[in-house]
Length: 315
Length: 307
Image 1: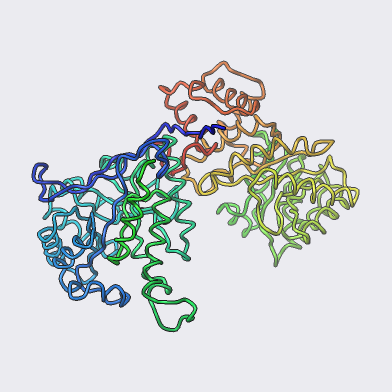
Image 2: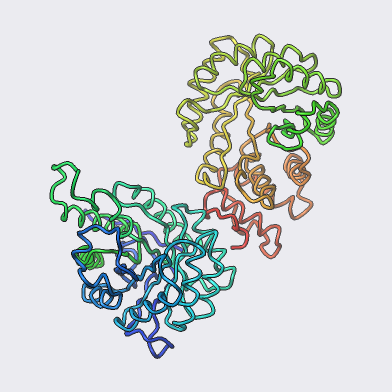
């Protein structure tokens, strides 16, 4: 008996956002990355072909991270001491986008220097995050935005209490911003409205809905992403933005991934557990509609890229 | 629409100050003004008053009954305070606000209401908190609240069920459920229990400039499903205008037409449609956007009107 598979036809679509600019467009990137453009729920290829697969980014730091799990530090070795080397290694490991997280110890000069070094070492599009303290973020990211005019970096994080300075810097220098709200659909949408009200076009915003690692609230993060994506497809223009999720950051602070001692033996091999924690969190969020997955371990990157290739296969 | 005036509420700084000063004139004036504005009952919410209830409840009742004849709604969680107020009331049949389906409150408050011949507002909320699905709220009414009233021989005509309005800012997905709850409750028992809601809860945590609009649009929807009583601000003139338009089916103005249309659509189990609105008119466009957030079609954001 023939079975007819019901198909949804959605009135809305996700905006297309391009990171990075090549020389032709006023930047120095060797390539650009475009995300978004979906007109159906993730991987429902029988309803609509997704024009842009999700991409994997690797997070690197402007200075050696002191609190990272040894599983991560062993993987990157001496590259941890040099953002340029780290960037090159990350590119070799399969990153499609780089994320450079600045440190609270950075000065405007050292931040600009680190960003320039990374741009020199790799032709990938770049996301630059401040250390996460509003004033410090602005102090570092404004000079970075100015020193890299035209590169179409994504700068973050914009949050409800601190977005104006960063948005203005992005507008004036041809960059994008990342808008982050604390796992709340209403606040996500509100922040997108506030940012576009300042005059930044919506196709220069990525939204970070905030997520939790496996076992640490992933289901809440998943639901928020699902709701935002459904609203977007139903035509809600201020939710039609590609989503970025910081999986590496979330997973490697979870005890299960971070530490190998003082946990039950039944938990099994520590390294494998950590990698599972990162890649399973990432895989779940891909299904929720993540467009950019930020990871820390090169092996998770390899696994997730395979998962994406398989998810993108159309029958 | 039977409005229980909500303005004597301890959340207001002025009320707090007047109470501290035992400013009799202030409360008398606020009661009279609410009744003049159309309130058919006056709610009195001074909090639990754990320390001075013996003095405060009789004092306020005596003051307010000096100037108005309408029913007073005793809005407190303090059962002793309720009884002190009931003993003082001399005029109209009072309202106890409120009991819930939580065993301890349901045990005491209906008995108290019966003893003094008061009406009682019963919330569809049990120990597990507020259920969100319409069916679950109706179940609490039919399986817990009404049986308790029958058990103590409390007249169902004096039972007022409050199915609990939740805010569109954070609990948006439940706003449509409340409409269905109100619709269903009217068929839940014979005689149908009276239903009342606290309207302004729908705009809790919403920036002030948008609260009145959200309240009004939700009111039109609630009137569509048959709401006839609410605790609300009787001084809200545009709100009173909406009530008048819908009750008299007055469609002589564009806004009168729009609010009637919203009520009609909801009454028919339908939803307001874009073509019901002249979107070139800023007021109507704002009302249309508000229907969409209240029906959970578009995600709420504080700046939803700017979208």
